[in-house]
Length: 356
Image (cartoon, rainbow, N blue to C red; front, side, top):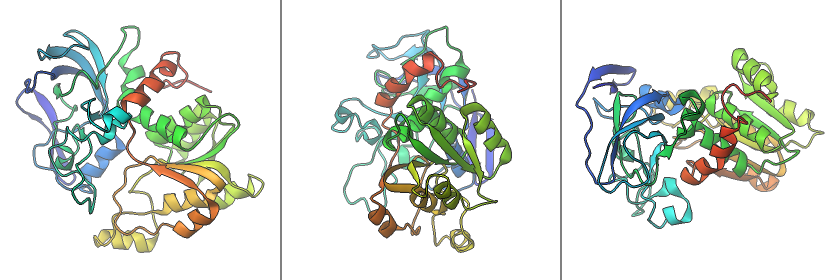
């Protein structure tokens, strides 16, 4: 089959590779019908994430048709059309039983990405995302093997096109978790840093949950214009103003109820942070997160939805302490949140192209 493979920093190639085969009785093989490029894939492409090997197949956002199934697969069958969550979870371990599926402690045979983790078991394996997360071949290919098929894949009805459900693989549940964890509800105000796909899904879910005002921060005018037209956000270009200061001035000098960092570790940072990152003395910039803490009101909430890779990033913990900001983060819990977004997705509340 043909697949997109990693060959090194800034070097990916479509190559002919062996077709996947069943390796466990609860595996399925999918013929891929749709796949997407995640912002996290760009971290891999730019050489920002370790433990990639030449020839690794990329991609953790995909869906397709089941063409083969192991003898223990009971939830789906050959011919079913499914969308696949990006993490691989067993459904039976300590964390899966607590609905913390991305923390599954049985599917990743490698060390995971936690620094100074002691003897803690690694979290769940991921498709196409470094050998820290299991080295499982991804879905930017003609076919893919999907382990634990009784837990992850979500069957899709024929009436829904690929374009309307593909986002259930990652970015929609990630945006939904961000909106939930930030405490957004009817009448809320929220700022979202980053008008990329996760930021847009966060805005869609914030509207669905009843947010009254949404500030969107980015420096690409075309992205801000799309977010304004589609989700009714109040756009802020951070190249032109200090976002937190502008938000405070427009919220009766209190700040917003909630803040979401939808950028992650490649945020545009200060000159010092940029220099330290280039020298490998720092993992990334924490500027977006500092802005989140500055822009949110006392007692407000926040969620870091972007991927993190920070070593010594300067985070104003004292300011967060004094303001009592309830800041949450972490990979989305996956299956539980997919269940929470599938219903609204079907009726078009957050589907791509929906207007609010």
